[in-house]
Length: 153
Image (tube, rainbow, N blue to C red; front, top):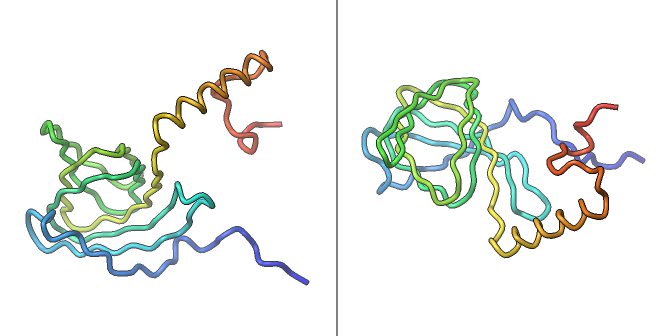
């Protein structure tokens, strides 16, 4: 009897749902945004979404860490210091929790967003202490080793 797979296929062929940008964030135009949740971690700390948006200019405030990979189109991103960068298909950008950016979508953008809720500082310190003690117990282990599934052999 077959069991349901934990793997999810077909991420490129997803139907997106309306995901309006907050009206008070919009600076110019009438950007129309849509998204679709592709996956969530078991503990709820991480998720992956597909998001797209039509032309417009708006602010975005990040309450979580977000790594963006642009699939199609482009966006001009301006940080609070005024530094701007055009990000095009095939490029990535990281927005840490607590940051903000002004987005100018010239025509259209489609992205994959890898989102993660940061751990509380006390938990980060405890995790670092645990890793340190673990390295003391296994002196040959590397500190920044990739997960086993990415190691050759």
